[in-house]
Image 1 (cartoon, rainbow, N blue to C red):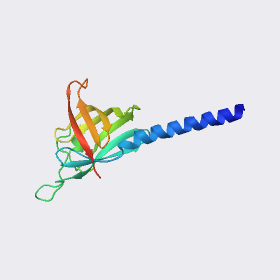
Image 2: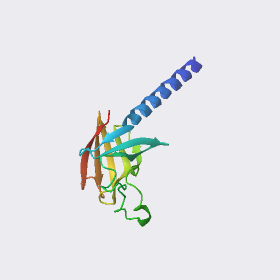
Image 3: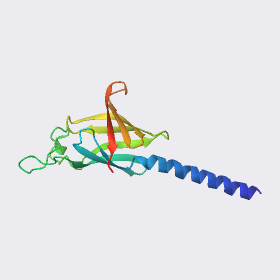
Length: 145
């Protein structure tokens, strides 16, 4: 009897863990910003979530050269193309459709901000801030289908 109870309990715990992991991974995929200028591919490394600029409406200048990360404070990174830059880093899932403790890089300003993301269906609410989230800016990204 005890053996059956232990096996049943182990099965319940395994199912709960799998359901939680599936819920956390709901953020994976491509997201487009409100202006439609870029798409970010969100992916997972270990137990953290990251996002890179996977598509740009205009990735090149008129002369055909790729747009560069010219405003990056790290001079060594200023010559890299914007396309492919990792914008989102180190997010963890809190179990309640919220991803936190990460950062977001804004290639338009060259600044990195603390960031919190909340998933609501096919809308990803992004909140970048300095210090506390009260002082920041929000955007809603739409899932690319």
